[in-house]
Length: 205
Image 1 (cartoon, rainbow, N blue to C red):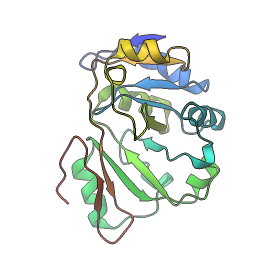
Image 2 (cartoon, one colour):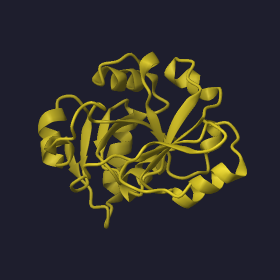
Image 3 (cartoon, rainbow, N blue to C red):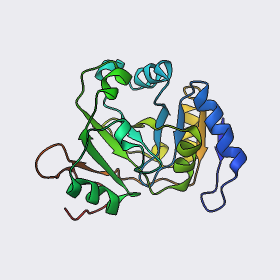
């Protein structure tokens, strides 16, 4: 199913359709402020396993990030951070960044793993933030491509994405053309934040 949503004039009924699909355990493809991404309800273990399957890995090996609507519920998933780290997140988000933070004890339970870090995204895209807000908890998310793949047209054009992925996912959101470059990844688990991948945006650390 291809569902068109205009970020400048969001139809609330469309958001409700997406959230219902997520609540039923569906995998969706959606726009962000960088590339198109694929995700599911973080609280649905069956959906998490299916998302991992689509990436060709087991859930225990998955390194999914999570998308939040804002910073208010971060403490549900990450350990207490120092003031400087919080200020960095607060001035950068929403934005095209993934911040790797120290995970709390909830994260290993969700992913059936002993992972100690979690990537946090709050994209500067109203469509996905409204979806997450209505859902009531974050999405687990991953890119459509693998790191070694080039980002091709079918990762940018919603119609190309639809042709390639319609049979594999519950719903694809057409939010306009995506970008070719991913988020800038910043590791905040050490003493000082460190850029581990330079993406679409610069960041002042």
